[in-house]
Image 1 (tube, rainbow, N blue to C red):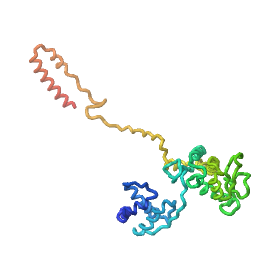
Image 2: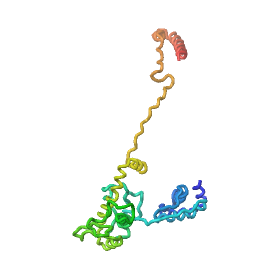
Image 3: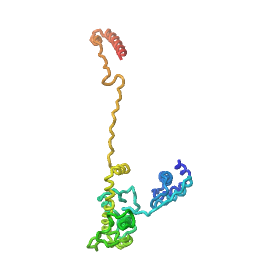
Image 4: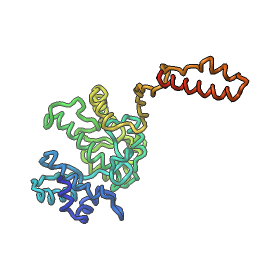
Amino acid sequence: MDNYRLCATVTEHDAKKAGAEVVKQVESPLLSGLLYPGLQALDEQYLGVDFQFGGIDQRKIFTFAELYLPRLGYKKRAHLMNAMVPGLAGGKMSSSDPNSKIDFLDGPDVIKRKVKAAFCEEGNVDENGLLAFTGAVLFPLSQLKIDQSKGLEGLGISADPKPFASENAPEGTVFTVDRGEKYGGPLHYTKFDDMKNDFASKAIHPGDLKKTVTAALTRLLAPIQKAFQEDEDWKAIEKLAYPDPNAKPEKKKKEKVYHPPPPGKGKNARLPRKLPTQLRRLQQDPHKETQKRRMHEMEKKHVSDRIVFL
């Protein structure tokens, strides 16, 4: 009902504006695209949340929710946003494009294939999904592990205090780029900005960055995937949430239903009686007129008997 109330309040202009960054914009938009912002806004009320978290591409929908929910008599929620990480193929990361992102359950071979195919132009730091991912995910995680090992944050000493720094890295190293010795050897960084500048100056080759990120992702996801494989409940949930599109549907066994035959049909039905012997003999009578008359009388009597019998 609230969706209908919202439709009676929101203008087409506001609906299109709210979904401008998350709904594909076409000259003649579908009704679904216009309803999308309102449905997401109503989620805040029906899920009972105090705030909603999303990327900066959601800011217009958040503004829409802050404007229209109070008009329906519901309280205004808070909204938190974070920066968007570009996809591996360049541009916006998309959940509908598996090659633009790394999934938690991607194995080493899949990670290697996706990273290898990722857009990573030498010296380009603006449209580089791998570099952005390193700065947004790998550097903070490595720093968190180091802080945990020092007892500054977290639950205590980590078993892997420096997951993305090489063994011989200098003290304070947060991230190491595995560069070949003939090109100058590994590069160690304490800040992401220094690494970003080196990539911009072409001190780091895209091949070295891809190799380093592949190893870091494989190491990062290994314990998560191990825990998943050991939990049957999680595997069942994953199968229900993300069905395999290539899986062949299970053939349902047809239940045999007994349908009784119509009257006079089927193997248990009574067979019609043979014509009486007298009627067969009449067929050989040389007197045709008499034969026809008597056969007609006998057939009528036979049909009468048959009706009575049934």
